[in-house]
Length: 351
Image (cartoon, rainbow, N blue to C red; front, side, top):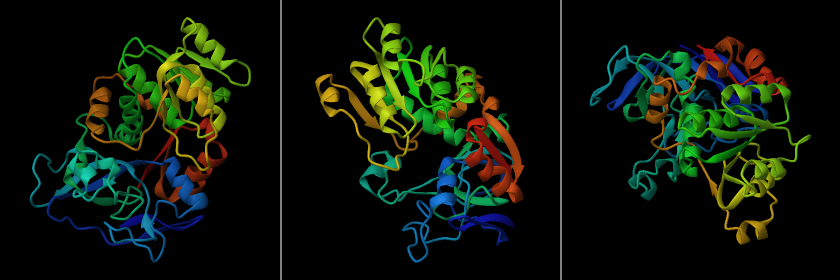
């Protein structure tokens, strides 16, 4: 089958590789659409990072570079292996791409996203979405019903946002501020609105992304180069500040502004993955008892996201900014997202 494999920094190759075979407890998915993630871009520009480097195979997959990329995938079940129940050939499905050991204390406590050996389909081995087929563990495969597989390819990044929102404890009546109007910031905004949080403020510089934030459901969009964000949020909340803030930028000024915009006793969720050490005012965090929490991937979030999509509470079509073939991943996918990131949210790929 045709597959796009990652060999190292700036080295992606379309190659012919064997079609994977089902094993007990797995299903074979004929991939239809796969989203390009920021993680894929980091691997391309600076990797290997999450992909296991040559000579250092992943402890669960046993694989190292080259690996097939693509973890935001959806498709149709082509074959069902032994010992699988509840899934049938022809089902449209989305993959929850976590690979976990099932044995550590985190897996035992159903916090499997914290597994000590965790990996990902499309990064750590066992195949990925930039190929015609992938064989996956059945317990990580989620039926999407009548949803299209184009929308199914957005379930994974929406699950990241859903997990962050769930970790925050957000509820109807809260005021939430989302710092960053990139893909994850937009998805966080959409999930907040989907669960009934109406007062969502987006903080973004780019004019294109500010418009997208409005479309995603933000009722107010602030530009930190023009607006005094902290003052505006406090004005909106009677001087107290937001109940919750989400940092989706990965920059110290944004994180500090998130802390300053949040009421005493409120919560700040760091969603972004940082490439450098953060610098913040810890004194203010301590004296105002701000809860600063991290969020990693997802855990029992995919089914909730699929339900929100099926109920029409998230209009995901708006987030698809391009559809391309796997042969064009580098020039029309990765290069577009790196060089014209403000104009793109999700480019999805067909094998």
